Image (cartoon, rainbow, N blue to C red; front, side, top):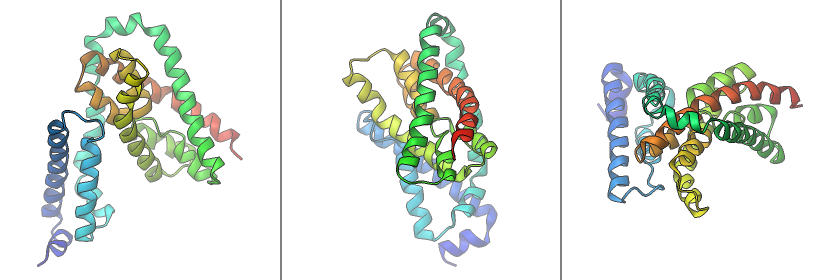
Length: 238
């Protein structure tokens, strides 16, 4: 029996194989980034996606089969996001002192993110479905999918936008801010949480606990603001 046949006919073993493959691919991405001394472009999530996608293509495995096999890993995405509350609780004093300026930046970032995504789709001739699916792209994936369900978008498309946007933010976020002379980890964390959701936030969390706290707050509050803002955008779209 060939590997594709084995993965198709034995659901339990296929699940174990794909979960192990996914974890190994991410571990490989982490090692690559460590060997490259934390280079932002060597993002573990991006490397894992490339490795798993290559394996899916090589074995002719449909994505639906893969997703069913790694459903338990997908479930852990929610608890992993909630776990960012730990550094937030540890740095609550810093957060409270920056509350006003952070609130202004958060609202501005959420509005720009939603409007920029929708306007990009409209200007390129995209239809209403794509525009609605793009609107919550900067929110962490579980929240983005829930928002898309409510407004009539395409959840799978939204998930793609959210993950792709998170990877881009993780790659260019820190270098861009440093080129602008911004070295405060509070700013780095908030920007990662608002623009890049969990993927960018995880990268900041590995570097600085204060940045992790602001990233966690950025993820949560950006999800709330976006959930209130996107339905208004839906009413304005033709």
